[in-house]
Length: 172
Image 1 (tube, rainbow, N blue to C red):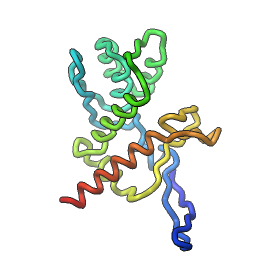
Image 2: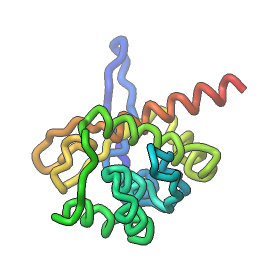
Image 3: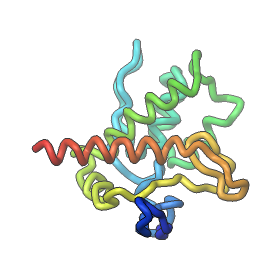
Image 4: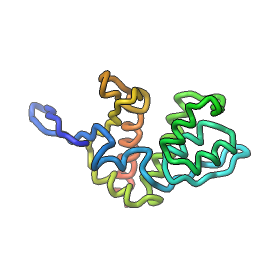
């Protein structure tokens, strides 16, 4: 969902586009959106193809190959719920630095020539502020619209990747 917010720069009023939820016309920004993603090989675990970033991220959370193969067949929402189940064995160590690193790797793939339509759509957002606004209490990757707080890590990663892609387009 998009809106414009007024900003003052050098005493001049300008409006900045803001994408504040990955819904409606901006649903494609969601990690649940269909795209080609490869979870990189790791130790004895092979590289694996996924049809949604959310599934690749949920599979990354475990080092159990059987669980990763199950996630590969699930829908994104089912994979997310599975990762919260008592049967799910989280990788160790598991920390925010690692979460950000893998999310950046996966977002780089989502918005690349692997997924040219998504890359085009991201570049068309120009310099819009991207906020993963949500109502499911995700204050790490998102911004909880109910309580008005969140780090918006996913939105920041997407904007960083957009800037990298814009710079590489200008260089070519």
